[in-house]
Image (tube, rainbow, N blue to C red; front, side):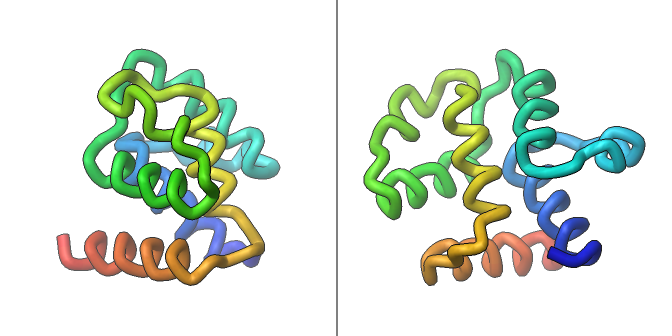
Amino acid sequence: MDSLEQVETLMLVEELFGVSIPSQDAEQFSGPRDIVEWLNAHLAGKKPNQKAASFLAGLARLYERPELIDQIESPWRSEQIAAVVRALYSDEDPQWLQARVKQIKRERKQS
């Protein structure tokens, strides 16, 4: 993933999780695991927004992991955060995931 793709992916992470990652923190990320750890620390007690809940529902169907949407109205769980980040940084690009990411990017440009 080149640096432009990394920036775009981090912007998607911010949008899906409803957070703003300070530049100094983002510069310290060496990979998805660091992002997951940062999000776990900064999302404690926060619930998925509508866009994230929809994305999680799609991942649950795609990967046959219904537990991802169990108690979706509750605060973020570590396995949910990891699943979203893993999907955004995945080399395997299922058609649904590719289409969903493009849709989120379009929506971001329109707002």
